[in-house]
Length: 106
Image 1 (tube, rainbow, N blue to C red):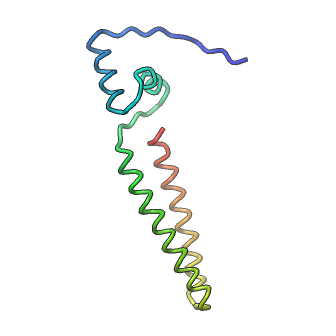
Image 2 (cartoon, rainbow, N blue to C red):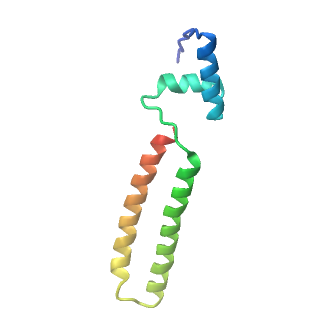
Image 3 (cartoon, one colour):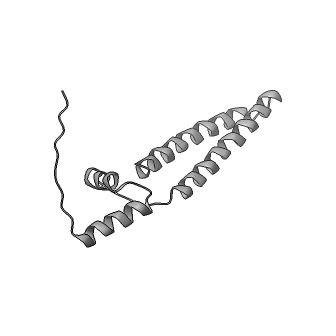
């Protein structure tokens, strides 16, 4: 059976205002903000829109590469082997990028 431990935390008025302001900025409830601050080793305030835009660009590269490979397959291109190797490299880098930015989005 899982048991949870409760801890009571006291804040001064100015500290509580700071917590509420930061939680509102991150669009979180104050309790969620406090729990995340207490449990996460590293807390980074970053713009999620930037990360989403970056991932869209990375995914577009994959889509374009997939279309190029499809055309190369249909035309029996001599560059098909190199393109498939490039696709493997792309997938490797994409997984590393996803892993890195997933840590930021906790």
